[in-house]
Picture 1 (cartoon, protein in one colour):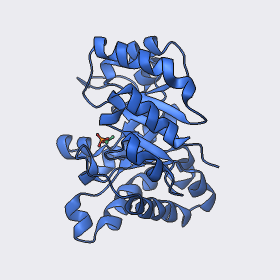
Picture 2 (cartoon, rainbow, N blue to C red):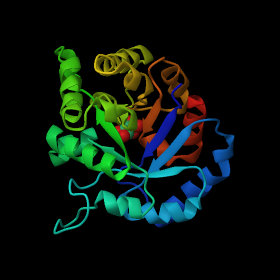
Picture 3 (cartoon, rainbow, N blue to C red):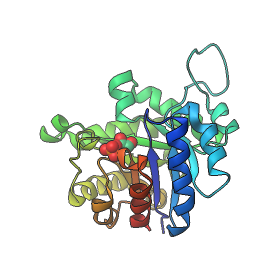
Picture 4 (cartoon, rainbow, N blue to C red):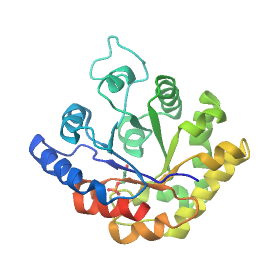
Length: 251
Ligand code: 13P
């Protein structure tokens, strides 16, 4: 049985004041959520602050990116996995479509980062997904397979039970256009089936989140699909009531 996992990707949002309000609200409501793993991923500069406000409750903290280099060095503007661990950060989102599209991250860089995170014991949340053009031109599955293969080639299928995969169709991110539960399930089943061809045991354990305009009113149906194990939530994770409702839907 896979335990559902919901993570909030705050992207580049928040201030000390807004985070204090949001995390305090989450603290007061987290007991309402059943057996679901929950994480929040603030901008890196606020990771320590978020951990202080969480004060050790069951919500984990993740980063939104990290360097390919594991420790330290002359890499201006970067944060290493060792630094994330040092600040009690248990997850890191890697390969988000915004990193791929806006900052030119390649499959090969993302694969290296997944490898570095796994070796350090930080759980990577590996994002994959197609653009609308790719979906409409019928290359969706090959696009997702290529994104997965790049990582599989570096870390191997046996490591994938420690990888969380987030399927995020690019056309559904921040657009209000969510994939239908059937569309999402179809891709989740494709991903699990692909992994299953390499190692059925690992494939049955891999948590695959859906991301892209998840809201309280569509979460129950999405998370009810057999291969959808929770969500990676953008906009709705900035509102405590919405995020808690989504976490409940996963439970
Ligand atoms: P939205 O939930 O705002 O569509 O963002 C999804 C996302 O990109 C999470 O990583």
